Amino acid sequence: MSATAVARKRGKPASGARAGAGAGKRRRKADSAGDRGKSKGGGKMNEEISSDSESESLAPRNMEEEEELEETAQEKKLRLAKLYLEQLRQQEEEKVDAREFEEDQVAGRLKEDVLEQRGRLQKSVAKEIQAPAPADIRILRGHQLSITCLVITPDDLAIFSAAKDCTIIKWSVESGRKLHVIPRAKKGTEGQPPGHSSHILCMAISSDGKYLASGDRSKLILIWEAQSCQHLYTFTGHRDAVSGLAFRRGTHQLYSTSHDRSVKVWNVAENAYVETLFGHQDAVAALDALSRECCVTAGGRDGTVRVWKIPEESQLVFYGHQGSIDSIQLINEEHMVSGADDGSVALWGLSKKRPLALQREAHGLRGEPGLEQPFWVSSVAALLNTDLVATGSHSSCLRLWQCGEGFRRLDLLCDIPLVGFINSLKFSSAGDFLVAGVGQEHRLGRWWRIREARNSVCIIPLRRGPRPTAAGS
Image 1 (cartoon, rainbow, N blue to C red):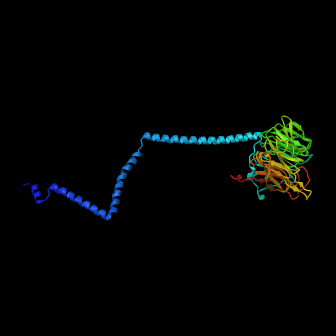
Image 2 (tube, rainbow, N blue to C red):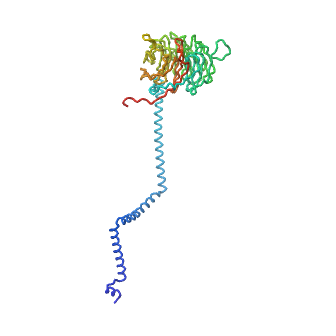
Image 3 (tube, one colour):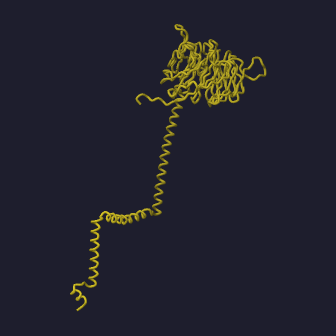
């Protein structure tokens, strides 16, 4: 009998069967151990099995990412080309936006230039102006008698002032110091430095800042080099006091007017007289000019404002004030402002022979009850191509006004306290300050004397606040 058979007969498994049976026992023990683990600590076993399964599942994913990161040379070229094209597209979009912005700016500037040439440009700045505190006003003292006229250089760096003491002073706007003094010339003395020997009534400076012209009661017009204050020429020809001077903008053509009722035209660069125009019926008090070949004059007691067309040798006559028109200035090529000793301020348009707006008693009344008289308007000024106007009197203040739409209204903005006769007013080119020439007497006479006044040049800062919002906006 074989061993296998003997074993089978005794109930013992064979060796192969013994191995299989052993494996089966081990599996059953493991299973039972697993069951006991599940029953006793199932959470821990689950965590361990979950952790193993996650690590096994992350392995192929990381391998996939590594495979994705490995790109071919062709794919890299394609990706860089797409980035380059995207950058080009963004740059082109930025260029288009910048071009459109520039075109809008150019279109706006061209529109302004066209309106300016037609004389219809009116920038709205008056509502932004804030009244300065009295402590902010800078006072420059150097003249012994009343200031009669002043001008500001085109770069807004210097001021020229003249007075009844026959002197001209050049001031620095920044420091307030005297840069140069042209002293009074004594009559009948030969070999002395050139200068004025009588009251200086008017001054003008060319738009390039090269020439300064000054006129006096002795019928003379003196031409100076503005930078060095060196005397260049003397123009003679008027038969009475020279009361108004103005350069045509962009040229060296000079207009002058006088108490002899005439308007004369000069070429300063060539030291030449051009022509004389007649028309006023009384002494002419003031004159102004801009770019066009024409000028405007205030006719004093004849009660007219006249526009002189130089090439045509013709004139337009305007009526409106009831008193002597002593001051005038152009706001733009089509509009002007004037002041008279009847206390009125008028806005004019060249297409109308009557004022577009007339503000009576612009500086109030003076005198005893029942005998009140308006304060004379002794000076006017306008910020070029805007709606801002300033007027001066001897009412202890100068006033800022806003021109209404179409120059058909004058609205008072604020009062700036200044004691004395405000004989001259000028805005800076940038509009950031206003200069006033103050004296104890009126520039054209000695009707009153304000003793508490100081003969001085006052620099008034014009700060701009936020533009007021419209109601309901």
